[in-house]
Every structure is written in structure tokens, then in C-alpha cells.
Image (tube, rainbow, N blue to C red; front, side):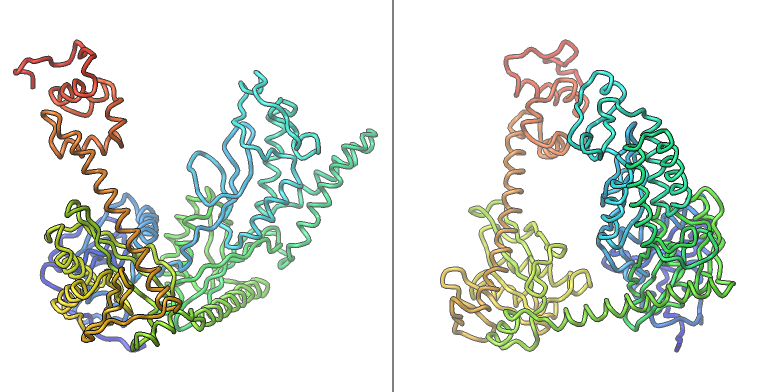
Length: 630
């Protein structure tokens, strides 16, 4: 790999580096726009960050790009290096820095939750609640997770209801058994028909199944079945026989891959010039019980050891079940730190190691085969998706004679009420679909609310600044809601920032649905049935809806503040504080004297209470009309 020398850093940045403490912690690099572009951890912050800026240090292209964009440095101290590792991964998930290796999939994977209740429930969830519940997952294959829950409910007659069962509610007979009890799918804990200890035993057995340890459970069920048969309790024995059959069917789905009964995970990694894929195979009691994968953004630019470390850190951050050993294709640079962290999470030692026996090498090869297959399948899907361009985009490119396909279209619309509370909104459509994460709302700060042209000039100027700073991506087409005047104002703002020739700009007037283009004195009228016009109308209407929604929100807030500022002694800041604390004017009106007094000085609280409760006397502890009262 070709390497170059480290780009020079500013004097201010170097001074900030030298001022860093020598303690463990996390450092954040921000660009000129204030966006976090890299998060790292260190045992010695000053020594680690200083290494980036050492003169003559060889760096790869990615690191050079990172160093060129660093404008500010921040850090967070931690007690230990393990704490720094955990915080680093938390911040990576929050900020998604451009130069870190990221889990590409931003979806929320499902977990299997076992609730922390006297009579626990088992169900799928995508939200973790830290209330003592036990979680298994995340499962990248939601279909397999649903199969597991169905299997557990077929194996164990545990409740599926969400009744708040407690010993008190059961004793008082608050709830009644349902159909599940009568068809044998539940043992009726709501009426106390099963002891809490016996129900807990069922949950413990379900946990063993989720952990892949089924051998001992099968032996227990078989022994209980034979004992019941000997006691001539054939109906109960038949129920156990059916549960045993379900357990055997579940076990047969799991492929035996090792004669060694040890529990372990195996990590396999495959790389492509644009992406990397990490696969985790879970082996329990010698059987392959699960396969999960993650796609690593920016992974192709890094060494294998760095990829291994990133995959381990980011994947096991959310894992609740960690095996005693993990087989890797290559040891990461901070293997001992990772072992310490994973051991703390598991509660017993965890070992990271390379394959040693032929059987372990074959397991690693199997994980890498799965990683390659998943990566190739993902790339194939992406290429097929990229090849499917909505026909309306092709029609729009043809009708407007655009230089390139307008896959990213941004639209700006203004909204105000007779010049009051002026706002603007920007919406973005990608491949004909709304990209709501890139919607923007603008509060007009300088332009008069009754000057639509000046408002458009201000908003487009602010949008252009975000594009220049790299905060927002440049569109393939900018759509302005309005006519010639709005279009001219937008072009003037773009010209100020040197973006007037970077992407096409058009305006769509509402009355006749006329399209205005720069340099063309005559409007373009598209057929009402054309795909191009329908797409532009849909985008324009979405921008209009978004702008009106924001305007109504602002107007409602201003109206509430105006109502409050009529009260003597209550100014705009106090009104905003009250609305933030109580949430609405009705809540403020219904607030008690004690609640108001905790939120405001005595004199303001008294004025507010008198205003909303004119017929009620003030509490004796409140200030009356004593001007000396603070």
C-alpha cells in the first residue's frame, strides 16, 4: 500500500494535543462544521493522539484525509481502558463518524426478552429495557428469532398474556384463566394453578434451549416421561412426549460441526473493494445453533486485525450471551483489552485465540465461506437495486433536459401568516422516495416575513452553506416552490456561494403548475398526466406540508407565550421556561401553588396563580402585596 507523509496540523490543534492528559479516555475529532468525523480510545490520550501528528509519520490515504479535515479536538476521561472501549463504541453508534468502521446495517435487530417478573414472559422485542430482564440476541435473521419463540411456546406452557401478575393479585383472584389454559398452552399462573418455583423451572429450561444446551433437558424430559408412565399417569406422560418430540425436531435442525462439546463463537471476515462482511457462527455443545452477520462500512480500507477488532467491539457491545472462547482469523492489536472487557461482561474468563486443531481451522473456513456468500449476495442485490431507476426520474431528466439523472431532489418552500412567524422547509427525495432524515426546518432570522423573495434568498444561502461545509449532500436538482422571483432569489444566493453552476435549479408555480428555468423567459408547461409533473407536484406538496406543520408549531408556541406574557411579571423567557416545564398552557393553568413555587420566584408564581385562579385566595405562605418580598 502506498503511504505518504502526515499533513501538517494547525498550531492551535497541536497546542490542544499537547494539553491532553495522560489518562485513559476517548478522543473525538470534529471538522470545521462541528461534525464528529472520528472517535478513538486510548490508554494514554496524549501519547495516542500525538502519534497522529508526528512529523514524517507514514500514513495511508484514509488517515491523510482524516487529518486534513480535523478542525477541533475533544476528549472524555474514563476510569479504565475498558471503560474507554465501551464509551468509544457507544459514541460511534451515536455519531456514526465518517472515518470509523461502522456497522452498515442501521436497522434494529430483534431480541428475545425474558421479563423480570414473578411469572416471566418470553417474547420478541426490538427495544431494550434495563429493568433486569434477560435478553438473547440480537438476531440478524428475524424469521429464525420468530421460530425460536414458537419453539419455546411449544416446548413450555408459559403464559403469553401481559397481565401484571403478582402474588397479591393472584391471592385476591384479580384475574381469570383464559383459553390457553384449557387447551394446554398455559398452566394458569393467573389463578395460582402452578407454584412460582415450578414456573421458574420452566423458564430456566427455556433459557437453556436459547443457549443451545438441549442435551441435559432432553434427558430430564425423557426420565420424567418414563416415571409418569410407570405411575400410570399416561396423559401427563403424553404431554412430555410431545414436548420431547418438539425438542428433538429443534435439535435436528442444528448441524453437528464438532466432536468437541465446548461452547464458542467463530468469526469469519470477507472483504470487497467497497465493503466488508463479518459472520459470527455460534457453536454450542458441538452443534451450530446460529449464524449472524454484520456489514462493515469503510471496512475495506483497513487491515484484517483492525477489522477483527471493530467487529468484536461493535457486535459484542449489544450481545448478552458471550461464549468462553472466540476463534478469530487474526488476533487484534488490543486482544488482551478485549478479553478483559468480554470477561467482565460474561462474568467468567473469555479467550480470544486462533484455530489450532484441524477441526477448528475447518470451522473458521466455514465462517469465511458464509461471509463471502453473504457479501456477494448483498452486492448483487445492491447492483440490481441500483439498476432499477424509477421511470418518473428518467422522464424528468428527459423533459427538463437535465445533464444527469435527478436521483436526489431537494425542494424549498416558505410559510408565514401575513408576515408573522415566517419559516421555511426543505425536503429531500432520493430515487423518488422521501428521505426524512435529511429534511430541514429553517426559522427566518433576517428577511422580513412579508418578503417571500428575501426569505428564499436567506434560506437558499443557508442551505448552500451547509452544502459547502459538507453537512448536506448536494442535490441533482433543486426545486423552488414559486415563480420567477423566487427562482431569481435562489440563484442569487447560490451564486454568492459559488454553487450557481453545480446543479440545476427550477421553480414550480402553483397557479398553473408552470415550470421556470434559468435563462428561459418562457415557462414550461408539462402535460397534467406526465410522470415528471406528478413527481414534482408530490415533492412540492410534501415541502408545503412540512413547512405548514412547522409554521403552525411556531405560531402555536408564540400564541401560548403571548397569553402568558400578558400576566404582569411574566416575560418571554419565563413563558418559554413554563411551557418547557409543564408542556402546555392547560397544564400551567391546572398547576398547584406548590408546583408553581418550585418553578418560579415567589412574586412571579403569585402573579401566575392570581391570573388563573382569580377567585381563590393565595396560600398563606405566598407573598401578598408586600413589595419587599423578593
